[in-house]
Image (cartoon, rainbow, N blue to C red; front, side, top):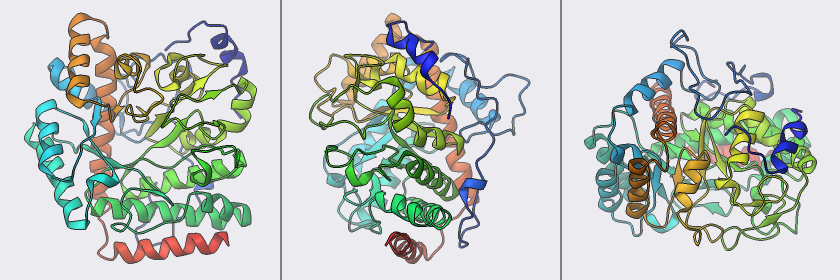
Amino acid sequence: MLSLRPRLAVTATGLLLLSGCATLGAAPSDPASEAPTRTDASSSRSAGEPTTSPSADPDAPTSWGPTAGELEQAQEMVAGWSDERLAGQVIVGRFHGTDPAVPAQMVRDLHLAGISITGDNVTDGDQVRAMTKAITDASAADGRAFPPVIGVDQEGGYVSHLRGIATDFPHFQTSGMAIQADARLGRRVTRAAALATGLELRSLGFTWVFAPVADVTIGAADPTIGARSPSMDPKAAAQAVGAAVKGYDDAGVVSTVKHFPGHGTATTDSHDTLPLVDSTLAEIEEHDLPPFESAIKHAAPAVMLSHLDLTSIAPGVPASMAPEVYSMLRDDLGFEGVTITDSLGMGAVAGRPTPALQALKAGADLLLMPVDNAATHQIVVDALASGEVSRERVEEAAARVVAVQMWQARLAAQRPVPADVVERARAASADLESAAY
């Protein structure tokens, strides 16, 4: 395992650090033998330094999905945008109600990167498709030749916002149980479940899934994650997360590994308050990081940052707003993809002044579900105008988001959704459950 202790020890003293494809219809092969080789994921790269150079092969994949050429194209594109357009491209909005016209107007008016859909926004399959189409059409009408971020929490188990609309899958804990029973079979059925979930989400118009959960739970003392976690065993959790990331890639949907650097040890709920996690750096390294290391090894495109007060890393500051935590993810673990906050409407951060701006300055590329979309957009626009946040930082963030959406569109075009996607999803759910019990 990559040792973080020497580097993170500096952080703890208060010194800031610098900021696969399975054939559709066939059972996916074992992801343990298919971890892609990372392409020059330098641990010394600073947050503002581009991940491509003019001499890079444009067709070479990055360590997180898009090609070098797609990232370079995205960087050139956003460099010409107005502050208003740039600010919108780093926000994934929320809305109330079920009228497809409401989120579509938000995307047009505020140039939002996209929308997060919750259970309160859905009624049935036809309404969901109408809503995702309206959002997609609004993004295109706003002049964007790449799809919007249309994401949903569809983890399996009780955190499934499309319950009754998409296929029910068991808790992610089931994957860990299957892996502990038979590691190879467990990885295979986990990857197949993620593939089926992703394809079914695409059939409904989604481009992102806010999964898999990479948190290693501590059991009954963990009130938030619990069975959402693949396992209490970091090694089993790492295998489950790696397999799931590959399955979502197979499906042509952007996965979101969460909640970095690990919510499984928190004994209070970040939906309500800011949990205090007093794990030592060594404990975080050994217990919490293996699933995230596995996700990065398997080319995860996006990682979600938690709202946790990590006393050994950035005391008193939510991880989602702490430069030290983003530095851990990028400089120490080598992650080069999209960083996204947990929902900014959660109790852990909602009462803080300008939480979205704090997260953006710290290193977030996407600001998820702020309490007020329009107000947050204006705050970012004003910060750009005043120089409170550099244009370079926001361009870097927006370019990553645009590049991953280009990649998603390319994968989706290569991997059409099969006509019997629902039947396949039901079979994959049953196979996963069977492998665990």
